Length: 146
Image (cartoon, rainbow, N blue to C red; front, side):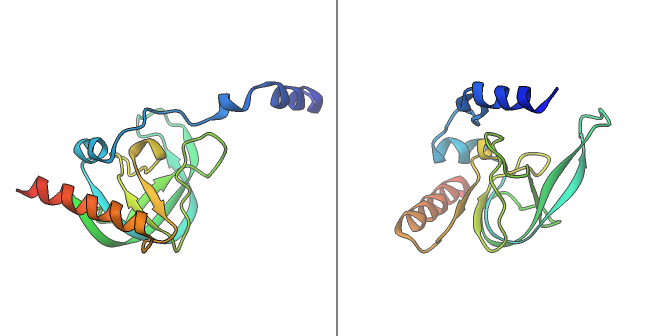
């Protein structure tokens, strides 16, 4: 395919078709369905090759992030201290792992923390909105332990 065709496809395909699409859930719904929920600070991110866990033999380049746990709300964070994400790109549901940022991680069974998992980041964990979210997570965790 030549460059003109690629450009035409990129221009003619609506941008909304590239959008990450998933059913948004409340924090309570996300928490109830999650196995593990914890707050962590990302300290390292790197590209690695990841083999398809379904055994197809295919590999894809992903981002692996090392973290330091700040707080645990439910379950146990992975002992290896690693979460996985897709390289940040338009519409791929990547969380966007940035060293130095704090996150609420809700990993799936393969350690992926994509946006549909309910994971999210904090630019400023001391902001009023972030504090309210952390208090809500603590409250949900306390209800679970009773």
